[in-house]
Length: 218
Ligand code: ADP
Image (tube, rainbow, N blue to C red):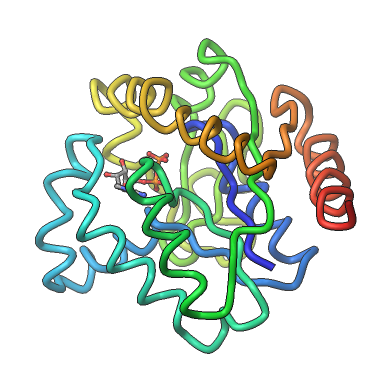
């Protein structure tokens, strides 16, 4: 079961992905998390990716595609995977359509979490994530019990450097000009499940699980 989740920055994609992956019993693989780990561990990929992340730009396709396809070959991905943040360009989608069959897999569904742009900026301004496991909070809409600490693991909460300033606008611009084009690509393959992301976390979650189940059974 290979599922792709597409949503703009601040759409609630990360929060929903974690819950959906758990409901479906498959790992949640987020390309941004993979990059941040490579950067923290100071690997070759991390060295190449760092400047792009800091500016809020896309990392070049060759680096990104190689990193994600390698991750998909690990043992935990055998039952399937929920991909979050990848693909983001047509070239990445094509590379995935080429690489998955070699692993005996294909893309089964593409979920689009639709949230209007005005709403996204406000959500991003309040977003904090935890150091240990990237659990997501929002100081306005979903604050932690204790300020600055993760409810789940007690680690420190921090604001991503690309959630502030110009990098936010740049990431949203890229999403609405480039990533959004992926929807056409997958609509042509009749794989898109669209969910209204502008409602409560619980309602979005329910719509997501129902939408995916219905699509997979169709
Ligand atoms: P967001 O989607 O909120 O910007 P992510 O954590 O998904 O955050 O990604 C953070 C950064 O990692 C992106 O701004 C980009 O620099 C890089 N990145 C993640 N996924 C990709 C991808 N599929 N292609 C290119 N760059 C990526």
